[in-house]
Image (cartoon, rainbow, N blue to C red; front, side):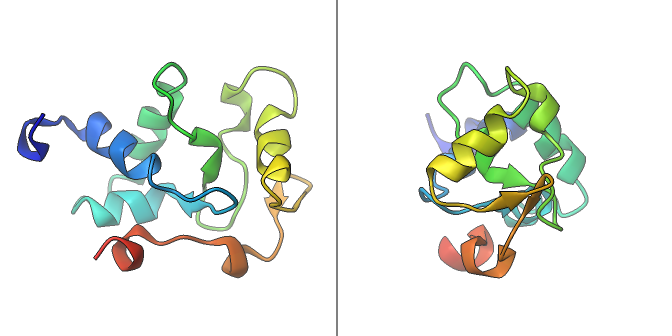
Amino acid sequence: MKPETLNFFDKVYKVAKLIPYGKVTSYGAIAKYLGAARSARMVGYAMNGSHNKDVPAHRVVNKKGLLTGKHHFEGTNLMQQLLESEGVEVVNNQIQNLKSVYWDPSIELK
């Protein structure tokens, strides 16, 4: 499928699948990379619908590193558990050392 024929959610999924193991990015960073800087909430909606699409949605957090999407994962702490299994430290729903694990698609996918 050609990129120009992808809908916004599919474009979000394509970027999210590129987030490396042990790294996170934000809803806003994906939106900005896709040329829709004011569409962070739409990226969040896409992540909500991504669970059957082999998308590592657990690697997408808010700009402050908060696990704002955690209630969309099965179980109480699945999002945190998935991140911790990749070596990402999470305390009180907050990614620790965000700078060291942050992946910015606008920089990494030039």
